Amino acid sequence: MVEKNISKQETYNIINFRNKVDTIDEKILDLINQRLILAKNIGNVKGKEGKPVIDKSRENEIIKRLTNLNKGPLSPEDLNRFFKKIIMLCREIQNHR
Image 1 (cartoon, one colour):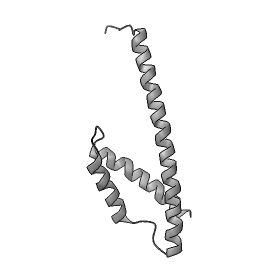
Image 2: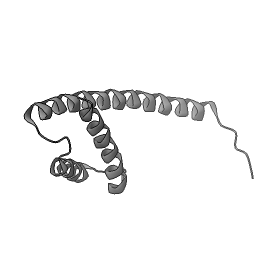
Image 3: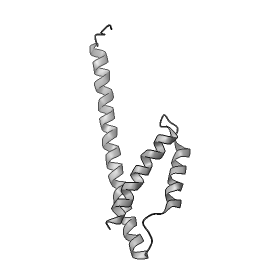
Image 4: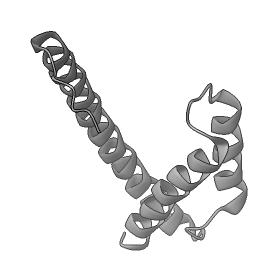
């Protein structure tokens, strides 16, 4: 196997890309926390109205809408798994209202 020397330009590009990834990760984290706060508020309303936490039709509607909006490269299967996990976390926070 031949080892390749990485130039300063390539190193800079990697650092630049990683910095952009870090910025996006921070935004994703903030948005997930905002979503969980909203889910908790929704859970409080559901509790006052005597509604169950789980609403399968709403969950399916979310997945379907996002699948239709997805332009990739995220596969539909990965999108489904990713958002089902987020929905599960939202259910958990609603159960602790």
